[in-house]
Each structure stands twice: as C-alpha cells, then as structure tokens.
Image 1 (cartoon, rainbow, N blue to C red):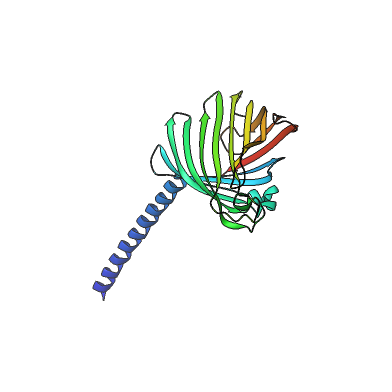
Image 2: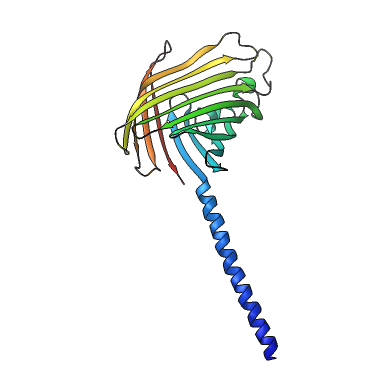
Length: 247
C-alpha cells in the first residue's frame, strides 16, 4: 500500500509540474500572440459617403512583415442606398524603413453600386478593390497616401443601365507639433472612371484643405477634422471627421 501511495504521489507531482509548465507555456504563447496582433476601429463622416465605420487589423509573421485585413461599413451612410455597400479585404504590410510602411491589399464588395449603378439587386461580388496605402510617421512629420480602384465584378445592370468604376485616392502630410497635436494638409479625389455604358470619366469631388489632429501621446485614441474647398465646378466645400482607437 505504501509503495502504491509513493508511486501515486510521484505521478501527482509530475502531473502538477506538467500542468504548471503547460500553463506557463500557454500564457507565454498567448502573450506573444497579443503583441503580434493589432486591431483598430475608426468612425468616419463626410458629406459624400455619410457615416461609415471602418476597422483594420494585422498579425506579425516577422519583424518587418505583417498580414493585414480591413473592413468598411459603407452601408452606415449613403451606402445604405447602394445595397448596404460593404467592403472587406486582406493584404500585407511591409516596413520599408523606420517610420515608413507600405500596405498593398485587395478588397471585395457587397452591394449594387458597381454592378448595376444602384439599379439592380444587392449582391456579394459587387466589385473588387485593389488598393495601396503608404504610411509615414516620424518624430516631427506624419503622412498617408492611399490609392484604390473600384471595379465591378459582375454586370447586373438592367437594360439601358450601366456598371460603374471609381478611382479613389488621397494624400495628407502634416507637422507633429507635439505627440498630442498635429496639423497639415489633406487632398482627396474621387473619379467616376467608367462602366459598361459610361464613355468618359468625370470628377465626383476633389477636396483640398487643412486638418488638425489630437491623439493620445502613447498611441491609441485620436480625433482628426479636415475641411476646405471642393475644386470640382458647382461643388462647394468639404468636411471630414474621423475618430478612432486601438485595442
């Protein structure tokens, strides 16, 4: 009996050590994964797209390369009239230099803006969006360049209707007066690039003006307000408000 108790005690010790070791290893893995995983949410509003929440996330495979994904709930604003327009995409982020990253992605859309000019049914596969984002963040300088081409994946346009394609890009560059406050200039251009029944491209809007931004010094919540003029004839001014936070 004593022999069996001694063996049982030994097994219990080994099991306890294994459980403790396993928990330490698991906690270490989860802690490492938490450091590798980033996620942020932003709330946006402007007079063309209306209100549209966005999110973006990334997971690091190496020191300079990260898998990225993003989504835009266009349907929260005027996109509700475009078949609850929704965009989701994936890509990769490359650290080109200190404070400079390049993020090519490809997105897919649900809705009816591209596939039928809002005349047909809301569908998955409304369009495809190859896009590129370049971010700059230095001690005194910040900036971003974005370029995306929205092309229809399906033709659901009725007779005498049309599919639509858009080119969308912006550039902003600013001075970081402090880690809390920055200001700069914002330029943004949206072009109706064509479609199955569209022969010439037209400017939808062309915004130019200043921005101010307030952000948490250690990173995290931020708020940015951009405003100015619309260079497209017959258009007036523009305003754009964005606030976001990271998890």
